[in-house]
Image (cartoon, rainbow, N blue to C red; front, top):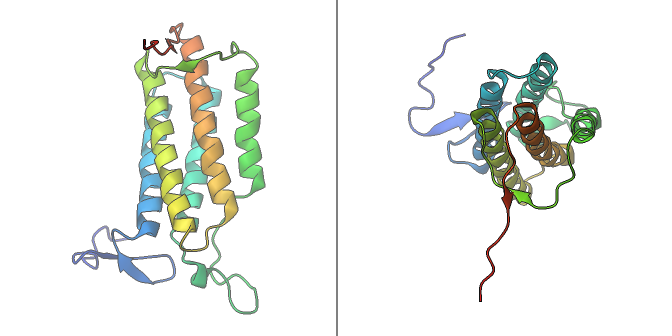
Length: 191
């Protein structure tokens, strides 16, 4: 596979299925932000975290590639008039979302109840989780904007929403594992 094709030198790129669009198209912004998120998750995986968390993060990274391919496929290229799939690409589905929910529930079992918002930080690994969570929320916002103009499979939005929750709970779990104090946000009272 050749890395450079020169086909994008004038600011356009091809979606899955061949349709060419501007590189600032909403669909490109959505899956580009998912790609950025995937890189941040790789950074978390590179930290000194438990092997089971690394395994879960690899699963999530694979799911994000799948999700990105779904976003890179325009609706008109997904199915034929007969209803049969035109392009045979994997799909994010309810089992991917359930996987995240189960991981969130497992981590939450050992965490103290949250009574306030928490300031991000305390340890670089925890901060990487919060950065990834913020990028995930941006990917979700981009995808919502895209869904207001074009068809987006609802599981994509659910997955991104749940993944940001997972990353928040992972940050809390890692704070606990690393003996890092969670600093509560307590707003100052204005007189």
